[in-house]
Every structure is written in C-alpha cells, then in structure tokens.
Image (cartoon, rainbow, N blue to C red):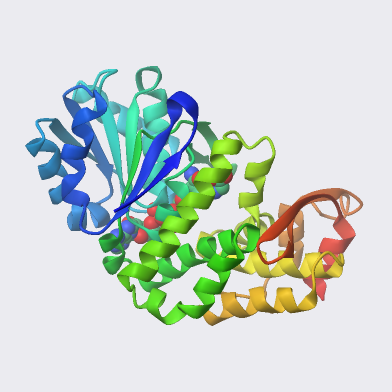
Amino acid sequence: MKKIRVDLAERSYDITVGTNVLKKIGDILRPFGLGPKIAIVSNPTVFSLYGRPVVNAIKKAGFDACTVSIPDGEEYKSLLWLQHIYNELLAHKLDRSSALIALGGGVIGDITGFAASTYMRGISYVQMPTTLLAQVDSSVGGKTGVNHHLGKNMIGTFWQPRLVWIDTETLKTLPGKELLAGIAEVIKYGVIWDKELFDFLDDKKGKILDLDERAVKQIIKRSCEIKADVVSRDERESGLRSILNFGHTLGHAIETATDYKRYLHGEAVALGMCLEARLSQKLKLIDTKEVERITRLIDSFGLPSALPADIDMERILSSMQLDKKAIAGELKFVLPERIGRVRIHKGVAGRAIKDLLKS
Ligand code: NAD
Ligand code: GLY
C-alpha cells in the first residue's frame, strides 16, 4: 500500500492507495478515537457494488453502521438532498463523535464532506473514492459543497477528511468514459507540475487503459502527491492552489454553454486544457511543439481536443462574462510555459479569448 501525507498541522491526514482494501476500513478507523456511530453515504449504483463489504467491515470493527443513500447524479448534489442527509443523521442519532464515510465519486464526496462540515458544527468524515476523478482529485484537499440553481459548487466549505482510503479495484466497474474523465485530471497534473508523469502517461497509455495495477497505482499515487503538496502549501486557494484550475476556466464555460449535458467534467477540462495551451501559444508563452504534445496526448486517450463546429461560441463567451459589453475586460488564466510548469496570468484580454475560440 502507498501512503501520502497531506500536511496541514492539526488537520493533517493520510491518503492510502491499495488494492482490495475496502474491507480493511473498519480496522483502520479503530485508532481514530471516533464514537460508536458511523454513517456510510453512497448512491444505489456504488452501494450495490461496494456497500456491503464496507458496512460489514465497519460493523466487524465494533462500530454501529447506518447507511444514507442519495440518488445517482450531479443534480442530487443539492441543498434538498443535503437536508435528506441531515434528516437521516438525526434519525440515527449521530452525535459530535460520529463520523461519515463518503463511498462514491466526487458527487458523493462533495455532499458528504459538506454535511460533515456542518452537522453539529462539524464532525469527522472519511473519503472512500470510487471513480478515478475522485481518487486523483476531489477526495483530496477538503473542498466540499453542493450546487445551487444559479451555479455549480456555489455553496460549500473547506473541511478536510480524516483519511482518504483508495481501493484501485473499484475502477474495474467504472464506465470507460468516467475513467477517461479522471485521466484528464491526471494529464493536468503532468502539465502543471510533473513532466515525468506526463511522459509516463504517454508511454504507458495502453497499460493504463487496461487498468494494469502497477500503472494505475502509479498515476493515482503521483497525482495525490502533487495535490497533497499544493494543498499543504495553500489550503484555501489564496495563490498556488489555483494552478489546479488549469483547463477549468474554459472547461467550465464549455460545460455551462452545453448545459452540463454534452461533456463530463473531465472531458470539458481536457478540451479546456487544449484551448488554454493554445492561448498560451498565442501569447507567446510556450513553444508550439509543447502545445502539440499536450493536444496529442489528450487526443490519444480519446478525450476531446477541439471545439465541435456546432458549439455556441457566444454562450461560451457570455458564461465567461465576455459578452459584448465586457469584451474589453481582462481575465485570469493558468497558462503552461512548458510541460511541467504553468504560470498564473492575470491580464488576458477578452479579445484574445474571442479570437482563440473563433480561430
Ligand atoms: P460522479 O460522482 O457523478 O460519478 C460518476 C458516475 O460513476 C456516477 O454515476 C457514479 O454512480 C458512478 N460510479 C462511481 N464509482 C463507480 C464504480 N466504482 N463503478 C461503477 N460506477 C461508479 O462523478 P465524478 O466524476 O466522480 O465527480 C464529479 C463531481 O466531483 C462533480 O460534482 C465535481 O464538482 C466534483 N469535484 C470536486 C472537486 C473537489 O475538489 N472537491 C474536484 C473535482 C470535481
Ligand atoms: N479541484 C481543484 C481544487 O481542489 O482546488
């Protein structure tokens, strides 16, 4: 098993990456000084695959386990379903010493973390991420939240988990498209921080897509190390942490412009990374060859690398508040200077984005 530390003084915790380790979670939690009650929050898709071994492990370790289920889908990461979680926690009489376990992808992780941060002014929670995206990104770093009808992730907190417990075996049941969405975030770490990781993804593409255990563990471990390093230095995104948003500014605008229906988040980020790399090239911050390599790697994984002809450019621009009135404004972007290094560029002219999208 591989262990990575997120170093945040009294809020520090470990990320553990293993195979077939779901059933160990009970024993692992014994020394955490938790009270007897633990609630496992999941959705029916994930619970039917992995719920039983987790519940059994928790009970075997002497805890009193209950389960909370929310429907499967981004639309349920909402205040309404948060209320449902609170109702269940109160009905099961969880108290300040109790803990929650988030068993699922980023949706379950975000809403469970938010519930933990607010229930009785904050209780412990554990992340057991079951998608690649959650294993390499959302389960680490303590960003929690729910969506509001006026915007995604608009209500939330920073609340660190006590532990992130990753079982790579869960990826075997993950739909291929979801796996690729997670790979987009791993490519992001390669571009922003680690050329070796980028090269590894290029060299071991076949093995990664075949879920070769060593290759998959390696990319998860390295991604978590990078995220842990960044979060340990800038927990609340006052500077450095924003480099994790590479590809996300345009990616998010593309998701909004397509009503969150056309692309998974990771797919939109892949497209956003290609566009933002091209933006960097247009601003003469990066060599053309590097941009071509980034685009080629994204494309070779079968992730989107170019805007489709039928996309509504005006909607992308307006979701970035770059409509006709604001086109003279400036935006902040994370732009690559070479593979493995990015800079935060504060003064990108609205006109440059417009030209990029229309070229
Ligand atoms: P998700 O949680 O919706 O999971 C994707 C799908 O895979 C779901 O249908 C889920 O039921 C299913 N699934 C999960 N694990 C499975 C498994 N092992 N086998 C079969 N099916 C499985 O999506 P996601 O991509 O994991 O997460 C996206 C969410 O994460 C978004 O809400 C996003 O805002 C959030 N996010 C948060 C952060 C953060 O730092 N907190 C970072 C990135 C993304
Ligand atoms: N996913 C970006 C962050 O955690 O900051």
